[in-house]
Length: 218
Image 1 (cartoon, helix red, strand yellow):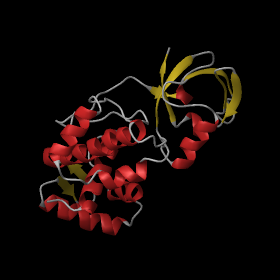
Image 2 (cartoon, rainbow, N blue to C red):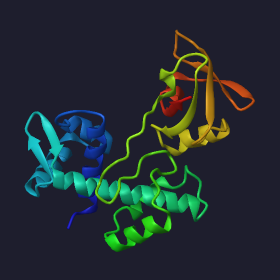
Image 3 (spheres, rainbow, N blue to C red):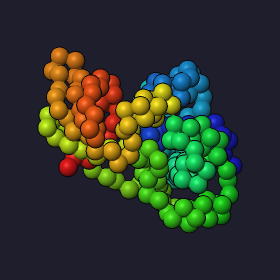
Image 4 (tube, rainbow, N blue to C red):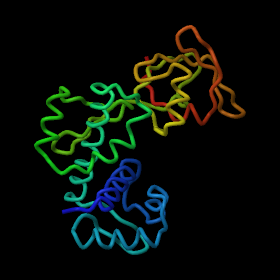
């Protein structure tokens, strides 16, 4: 039986492994978990004893197949609950993360199997993130950051890198959500800001915003 804290660590390391190769440093984990490196060291040693990861002193940690499976299961539950909250209970996409953080630790496999079937086995959550299947496999999609596309190119928003309430509410004000078509009208070399069009509206966005929106180019 895994504790809530252990599952959260496995989930954090899983996400970090998607963006890196090799061992994940304790400093990187500490930054992700917003805690001290010493606390991370204690936890990864416990998880290593449970065969959830391999820990190499001064190098970092890497999930075992067992640890990766549990992490993917937690992420699967989290994202399925987000779909349920948005599609069935009419929550907004900026309201569901913290609730799903609580629901993701429910242990009933049968409940999650029925939830998945009830929702029609969705591939993506309301933020565009892929939902692992029951075997822990993530569906890969071709996407790039809005900041990476060139002037006069057009893309469809397929996800967000930053999922904080503040950022999602900012996107709402700009009428940007999953499925929104965005065209780059201009790029400022000096600071990376952009002029974009969304529907009939045109406006500036900062480099930070452009670096946190995923698109598929058209």
